[in-house]
Image (cartoon, rainbow, N blue to C red):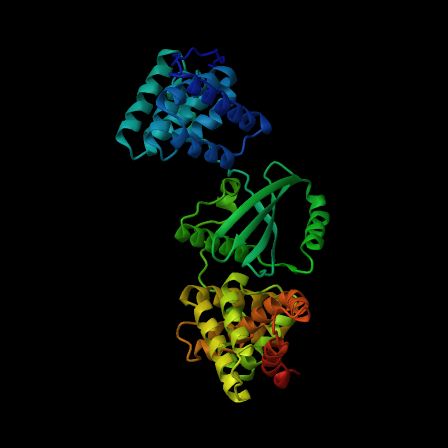
Length: 459
């Protein structure tokens, strides 16, 4: 017997306050968007919506929301009630189960039977059985529906599929862009754009729906927008591991996953793809790196490349050391050149040690490992080896003292030089006016120190 879909009547739970009434309206609008957006509502988006109800909805708001949604949408509300009934929040699941018992629909009986059979919460199992009995009393042939369901072969649900994955090089603040082109089960595609940071974790996310044929054009637009920072294609599984790494970094730092990423998390950051080892180690030999110490000595050259050209020390971190160096240069006591150089070198060493504390060394190790992989994917194999050699020098087990790490020293000197050059126009004008006794040799000292690190080994 086929049952008609009667309009169910549900108990009305009045909102306690005007604020509750407003919240019901807002949540209902979001639920409507989910249920009418596509022929088949996205399970991921509905799960995200349900998760959000845990902390935002009181019992009265939750009951009134579900009452109004089921009253208005009837059968079309079933996917949302299904997600809620199978969720981890017992309060939310119980409310959804109660309303499923008011919908005279075969699919409602199927959902309730699944909950009664599979949930580990005893109270929810009992609630589902009561709801099934309620459907029986309303004339729904529950036993016949469940018997026919047992003989039905379950058809696999259509899945989201990653079509392509792209990542950018890392900028001077530790940021990188990741792009995932995802094919949607019912046609079309989405381009998911994520901004990650090696200290913050996953910062922002946004997605854009489009046709599959539009993806190459859109990716090319992003490539031009990011220039000169390169954007390169990587295996989808590696992008998933990078996303999981960013989520882990954010969790450690106390940051949550961006709301816009959560609907895509099961596809783009599945739990079975943790970051175990950076991809560069699958392609380069650490033994070769150790047997060629000149690679580390040549690593300062990397800061002249586009991939690392924006890497600079924060000005506020270097400013105090630059002030010290200026005082040495401007001292009224004439010092022998070698004494002056020793004092300047000592300031630089303190700047290196201060900046590269243990957390920063770990970040730079990962940053250089990823940069090495970027060099590899763009055909710059020697630079890839130099970057990996520099990464190894930042390892906590490295025998290279941080003050003797060529890359670290070049990085700090470069930051000091940029800061000095930015200050020179103002100081030169003051010196010409007789207000300061500024010697231009500080910039020369910094530039010469950088050249000594780079030129003798440049090829």
